[in-house]
Length: 494
Image 1: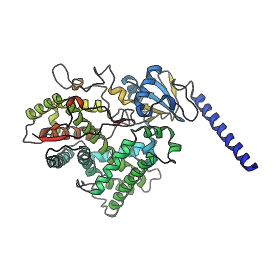
Image 2: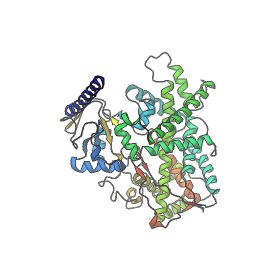
Image 3: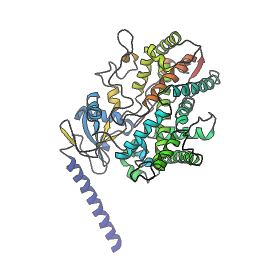
């Protein structure tokens, strides 16, 4: 009895200390951080946030507290930036101070701050510098990778023709194709479309990516330190991420056994060679863990974002058949039906280019941006942001900034066309983010979106089993990622 009483006193003491520490921490930050809704110990601003509509919840708070405010995701303070002007001031005008990487709890479970995307400091600098240079060596943004995309597009067209105009879910048709492009860079080869291991990897990438957009995924962002030990959908996401890591590890081991230091075959080989060169450097960040997580990040990011954007784009064109018709007309006039589109064609195809940009703007793949972290005590506007504080640059608020887009909630290619019908750039077009941690695959993604989009439309017109007015283009989930609704469609040969 006495023992249980002492345990109860100890538990209450720990609880009291934790509450006081939480309150003290908030007061320490108070007066430095931007204002925001009052937060409670442990749960932070959970009661003010709708995990089913996290982006909208944060934007609603900005209506009360302005474009720069602070929220607590559980115990985790985050400074939120809304609108083009504020995001630009932070990520471009004070690029170095905002160049740290914040947390994405689901992916951090596997990365543990390793790899090119989720690391910080010297590790991030070394890996990013190497990755950009190596991806260029393997043709990213060059003619060589264009030919690879065109070749893969040929396999896609063949697969779509084999459906014989039946109604299908295009998800894995698109993800197989897109994934094979980045696979050819990272692994040095493509996968057969019926490869069971490949299809399993794609399914796991889709599953874990979608988890980050679900209400449970947003709840995990707030309470990861507890939820990682509890049963729930997060455990399935962990299982999928671990299987993906094991897949990459196996690929690395295969490359180690057959490595020729004088003839790198792919990104993994180049990293392994650099590891050998850096063996005597005590400060090197070139090790197997960073290789595995970097390769996984490239494989994952190079598959999901582009294929999801394409999937959203096909749905939007079925909703707007007038837009599809205009793209068909421009493709027929500029390219014709007897040769494959080339990336250089986009200079003569302003309407198609505007449509692709508008799909990316409307689709808004990463609406809250990948979290940043302030690298030192930083004065931002009238606030002082302490070193290490996380920042959400709300890319969706930039892509939907009414100062730059006349009808930000609508799908409207005119946002990227001038009065003469020529393509016009827009500073608020930031789907790849901006500043020092912009997406390093931007060049490849732009080329893929243009070539896959035009090649598909050169060969097919689209048909939905629903009438145009019944097609719902509102997203299925919006959290870390935007997930389009599930749908079926028919590809009709032209």
